[in-house]
Amino acid sequence: MFRKNFLFVSGLTFLFAAAAYGQTVSVSPATLSFSSQVVGTTSTAKTVTLTNTSKTVSLTISSIVASGDFGETDSCISPIAPLGTCTLTLTFSPNATGPSTVP
Image 1 (spheres, rainbow, N blue to C red):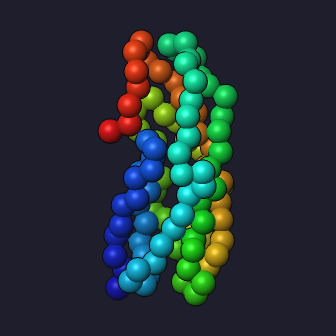
Image 2: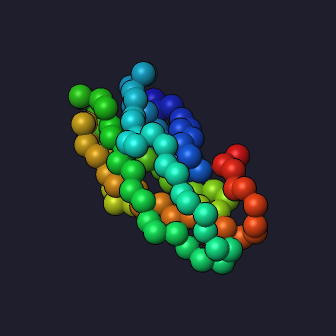
């Protein structure tokens, strides 16, 4: 039986099915900062590494979705093997002036 879990990290929502109770993932770095960006342009990309921290269970990812003014591409091929990693590439493209916050 799989549990559906959500992990929200800096503008990204991960939907994954955990095959084992207590299965964990980590992201590094845990936070990203984007400098001021002109409306309608896209920032330089920054990368985040997603790690399946389980030593025995693969991690099945159903989706990775960026929200708000953030964009995302990734190298994640599900399932991610135990102790396996994948890379997410994030960008910031503001649609309006002023501070941008992640819901």
